[in-house]
Amino acid sequence: MAISSFILFCYLLISLLSHAASSYMYSEDRRDGLFPEILREEAVTRLNELGKVSDAHGYLERTFMSPASVRAGDLIRQWMEDAGLRTWVDQMGNVHGRVEGVNASAQALLIGSHLDTVVDAGIFDGSLGIITAISALKVLKSTGKLGKLKRPVEVIAFSDEEGVRFQSTFLGSAAVAGVLPVSALQISDKSGVTVQDALKENSIDIAEQSLSQLKYDPASVWGYIEVHIEQGPVLEWVGFPLGVVQGIAGQTRLKVTVRGSQGHAGTVPMSMRQDPMAAAAELIVLLERLCKHPKDFLSFNGHSDGSILESLSTSLVCTVGEISTWPSASNVIPGQVTFTVDLRAIDDEGRESVLYELSNQMYQRCEKRSVSCSLERKHDADAVICDSNLSSQLKSASYAALKRMTGETQHEVPVIMSGAGHDAMAMSHLTKVGMLFVRCRGGISHSPAEHVLDDDVWAAGVAVLTFLETHM
Image: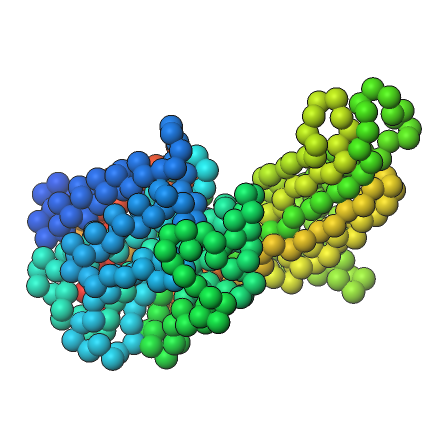
């Protein structure tokens, strides 16, 4: 079944079940044995507390190895220790908390998410997955079951997923997975500080030859799971607090640089201008047209590929999120314009076809305008399909958790695709991965309006606890 058809099938099936389920009623008289004091009250308090740890005044911002990021890591480490975990910080700034269980040599379950944020962020993106995992393990500690786990369980708060500071995502998880290139240490931010410099400023000395030591041995890892807000409207639309992720869209990030002829805004005739700003505007509109109507641009060996085009029509999204000019003065025709492109699709072949066509079209338009343009690929990640067995286990745990919380037989837990990237993408190079999504109000994320109901935080915690009790 094509992915787009599968998604549509899920929508229709779940909507037919009942829109009356749009807000789950968590039974007040079933709180015993569900540990609301840890999985709800304390978890929500910690999310709010972590949301105040920021490098900016008036809004939330934590980027790789910034002062606030380090403070957040210290706070998370305290909470890990409170849950009975042994903790440490690795050479990429990732914060780890681990319990060995009854068999320290068994393959370990890794649970993680990221502690960094975008600029003007919400408090749940990344943090929810970390806090939920810690809370579930704290419950096991309080009931005397933590040391009885059949295998080691390790929580990892990854230092960078968003890629805001260095425009290179998954610095933390890619290092653990062993897919971070050595060259990443020399990537610099807008101030000229490299990744390696940022680590050294925080007393973490990492050399190129030691980067490979951060990689986990695949034979030592059983699997990886991640709890994350959905960052989309599907769960709210179908009225479910939790959903299991079937897969994650592949993504590419580009840096496009357009160079022209700098000049005086009042003296250069329009017919003689080589204006990179006007050219960049045309390229951005081109990108929008291509991504809205890929079938008007793409062909495969002279023939349209129906399945790829169908997939692109439902999953392809393209965004220009950042643009800068030089010298950036109101009375100067700029000499250079730079902008970013974020392109995502479920189908990797289709994504590459879009990028190929985009490059050709951009170079043609720049040539017509007598400006030069270059496209630099800053980040690539293939689409990831989650492990079917792990997804099934997470689905069963979610179903059981909701039944325990409501006292009623629940409808089928939805299975959905993720258009957003997650650390699970990098970790899929190391081990099997599974993800659990949590309902997010309005589907809003990367915004201070990002919100998760307290009871949905609780539901996620009960689901993780149920998964650990059942399978670990």
